[in-house]
Amino acid sequence: MFQPSATIAKQMIDMQRAGVEGIISNAMMFWDQTGSVWNSLLNQAAWVPEEGKKAFREWIDSNKKGCETFKDAVNNGYASLEKFIEKGV
Image (cartoon, rainbow, N blue to C red; front, side, top):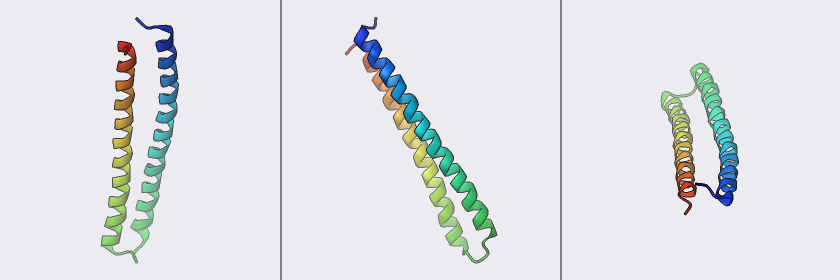
């Protein structure tokens, strides 16, 4: 059973989690849009060598994967924190 302080802590964590998830979601949307713009530009840029195009695409994919990994780590951290509070430790 939750104590009043645990309930308040859970509410604070839920509010913080919502804010962080919004920031991460916006960052991921930014990288998706950036990737779309770069792909469009690279497809039209005949002067850019193929290995340059490949490097940009790998960079975009790397950033997207990094955002997803960060989001998973944050979600796992909040899940662990919620379990910690529920146990009353």
